[in-house]
Length: 519
Image 1 (spheres, rainbow, N blue to C red):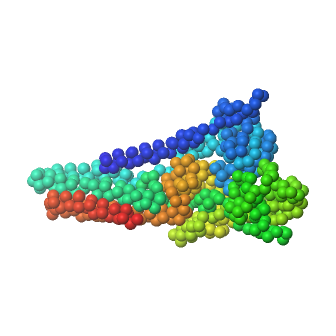
Image 2 (image 1 turned 180 degrees about the vertical axis):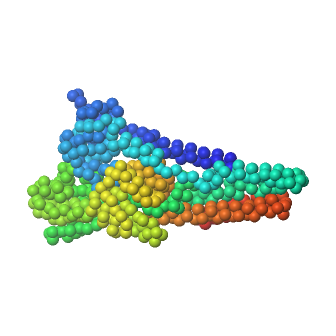
Image 3 (image 1 turned 60 degrees about the horizontal axis):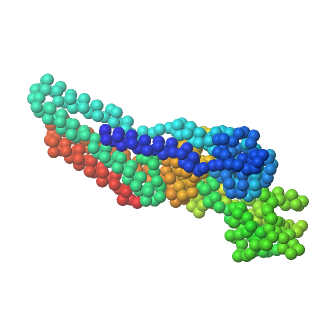
């Protein structure tokens, strides 16, 4: 029991140290703020920038502090904070948050909050708070250790010294007490139960499911509700062309090629998807960008416009945009040629994984920061029971807490915006291949293959591990109870006592190793 407790102590220390590294992991990413002063631009640490200062954020840079746009227009990648798959368009007076990534034009941002009050710092605090609120589970053997050893020692003392007071023969009863102690030695439990968990952890690692501790397999086996993030978890996080609609003046292939010749000048995720879908072509020679709206190309006497419906309206044309996905419109001179629909694609095994969970009796929920129309469409496509959209990180935590009030919950996510929810859930699973450092650190299990089907595999593994652990508990206690009774009655010698100790331990160990051999 002493060695087992020492092992548990070091395991807890390792897990807690992993959680505390959230802050250090984020601090490893140096962030400088480019401040606009009377004499030009100069760099400062965000902690040294005063509220009200104007900072410059160039294309490709991360927004270092919360504020509002003063000059400039661009699109921002907000996936790390909100999980929204479509970049957000911003212009003057729009709010931007620390952690967002500027994809296009130059922005001048007036700082509204100090670095210590930024969205990133609040995210870290939220993760730490959620971790402290997370229910701690104890394995049954740990609770048993508090009472088992004292009870056995007291009983052995009673066997050794109480009967001789009435029937004499102290030596005989001391011998029976020693047999009692040997038989009651908890080696079978102390060795086979941790081995059962290690077997489960080892079997999971072969499949790419990394478990940070045996206690999380216990909790996962008791889960009633499985909660998913959307972008990067159930979907790939990459855009693909899903539909092409033309006015009839050009074919679908011609529209794609025309758009691609313009979009080749952009690094926007939507532009990359269109270029990948179109046939090989060359870019127009003269292309200009209107940040946050679209691109304009000139070719001899023609002018081609490619961009959002907002871009078309800016040019004076009324365009009806689609709501289920993201639309890129193409116009030549003053004539609308068509629309290209793009959507974040669902992972191949997402629907099958959700269906398998529902067959096993689990309630499935999706929490996302994406738009309601997109979230509902994805939820219907893969068969999720309940969908909640347009949630900020703290709102995800609130939803997790509501669901946790009904029974144990597992949360599956991948991004920085999921870190707090992963920490607050009874057990958190993260997509390790694409997951952020904070999310991987906050989670209890890491799914290295980024496959939703591995969630089902992890749950089945946890249930199999729990079954084997309980088989060992019943075997050990059943055999020991039998031989203890025989020992007290004088029907078992030290040889039987040794078998009840070592023999049962070997049987239990053999049973535990089935987990490792099964994968």
